[in-house]
Image 1 (spheres, rainbow over the protein chains, first blue to last red):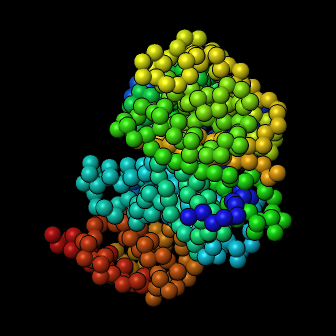
Image 2 (image 1 turned 30 degrees about the horizontal axis):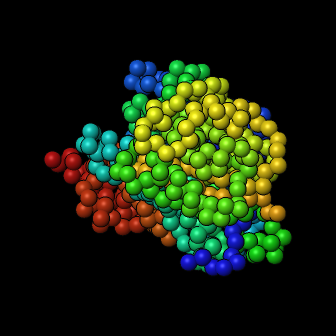
Image 3 (image 1 turned 90 degrees about the vertical axis):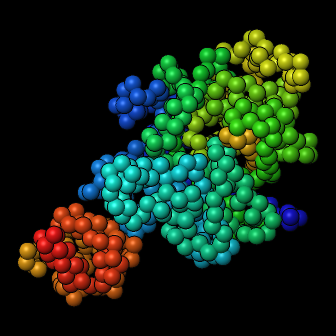
Length: 449
Length: 89
C-alpha cells in the first residue's frame, strides 16, 4: 500500500540514444526538430531478405565500444572493449550490448543524482531495469553452433546465460554498482521501459526502497529487427527522416529502433533534504490490460480505463501528453481518440517522440519519459514530426454502431498535434506506452513546483 | 609437442581473455594457478578450455574438463594426454 506523504522524485538520467554521443546532444537534436532515423547498412546488406531498412540504431563506435570477435565462432562479439575506460573488463564480459548501455546509463544517472558510494551500495537502493527482447544476438550464435553445426555447447563460451537472461541489464547494473536492494526486471513488451520505472516508483512510494535505478533497454540487434520485419509492420517507402510519421494519413508502420533510458529515483523529502536537483516528480503510475483477448489490436475501452486510473483526481490535468504514437495505422488513431475522450479537445498538446527516433521497443517507455523530463526542463513541447495530414474522414471503427468515442475525424484535432517544437508553460506531462498482449501503462510527471 | 611450446601457446590464449590482467601473465609458469594467482573468474575456465581446443586442434571429453585442476600444468598435462589419445585412436 502507498505510504501517505511519500513522494518520488527523478534526480538523474542517462542512457544510449541513436546518432547522439550523449544526453546533451540528444536534447539539442530533439528540440531542433531533427530526425535520428537513418538508413541501416546492416539491414541493407540482406537485400531482398528484408523489407524495411531504416532504424534509429546505435553503433558500437558511437558508444565508445569495440567488439572483440571470438576466434572460434564467426561474427560473434565475445566481449567488448570500453575505449573510454568507463566499465571494467570483468563487467563487460558478462554483458551484451544492451546491458553495457544500461550500465553506462546507470553511471550517468547516479552521477547526476549526486548519490554517495554508501547511498549507491545501500540496501535501500534497488535496480529495476528490463528489455523487451531476449539477448537475441548472443543466443543466435550459441544455438546456431549447437543445432546447425553440431558443436559442443561450450563453443559459444561460458557467458551465454548471463548475456542473454531476461534480467541481464538489472543484474549487470547491480554487479557494477554493488547495490544491495531489490534487483529485478519487469517485462511488458513495448511498455517495458515505463513499466520498470513505474514498478520502481511503487517500491519507493510503498516504502520498500528509498532509491532506485530504473529504466528500459533495447540493444541494437538485427535479430530483433527481423522479427518485426517478418510481421510486415515496419515503415516502408519513405526517406529515413520521413519514415516515422505518427498520426499522418500516409503512415504505414513503425521504425524499429534501439536505445536505453535509465533514471535515478529517490524519495522526495530525502532528495530535497540533501539539496538534490529535482528533475521531475512522479505524481502517479497506473497500468492495466485490455482484457479483450486480442494480442495485437489496441483497445479503446482499455485506454479509457487507463486514463481513469491515471487521473482519479480530475484536478491534475497534463499540459502535454507524451503519446505512444508508433506510426502504425490503427494504433495511432485509437490512441489519439482515447486521449481526446479523456481530456477533451483543448488545453493540452500531444507530443510523439517516436516521430524523431522511431520505436525503441523495451527502451521506448524510459527514453520517452526522459524526453518528457527534457520538455519540463526546456519548457518546450516536442513535435509529431511528419504528421503532415490528419485523416479528414472518420476511421472505419468510428462508423461501428458500438463506437462510444469521439465522433469527429482525426483532422478535427490538428491543433493538438504540433509539427514543430514550440515553447509553452509545461507543469505536468502524461506519458503513455502500450505493448503486445494488450498491456497499457501511464505515468504522470510534473515539475517540482 | 614440447611442454614449453604448449605453455607458449597457452599464454597466447590467455592474452585473449580480457578478465585476466595482462600484467599477471608475465612470468607464468606451470605452477601458476588460474584461480589464486591469475584471479581468473571460474566461468572463464570454460572459455579457456574451448579456446585451447581450437588452438591445439583437439577436443576434450566433458570428463576431462570436469576433473581438470586449476594450475597451468594441469591443462598442459591434459593437452598432452588428449593429443596422445587422439594419435592412438
